[in-house]
Figure 1 (cartoon, rainbow, N blue to C red):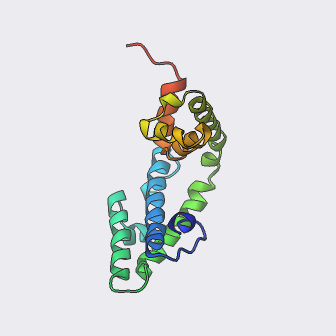
Figure 2: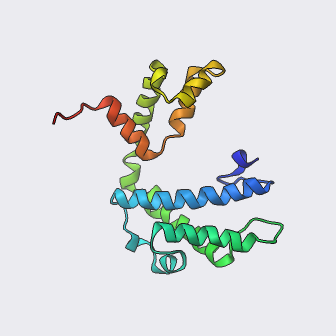
Length: 175
């Protein structure tokens, strides 16, 4: 239930699934803000002031505000939820990210490169499954190499995938 319904329009029926729904949203919103700032797509000051005031200026402050909100709103209740003020600000921040990051032409212009990178990583590890971490190689006994590689590549963070791609496909500089 938690895996099937933790994102998008899913409606988890278990407490675990409901907590995961919030945890996933809190994590990806804050991770995506950091990525967008590193990529030069936005700065923290681009986030509307009232959202920064409510949720926090820094990554750790936003996460703390959101997590604390879920704890406060859910304690001694039969449901998992956020306080109304923080939920509204979090939803507005998500909408802001859609408008300014996810659908931004600069970010969208990189999608093709990202897809190509993931395809190359997938093809490389299918040919060289011995180069995957032991955790994924152990699964080769009961799963196909393609399935194991999908699990490995899909679990990569953006930064990890980029670093792995550089390590495998780009020449190293001599010192």
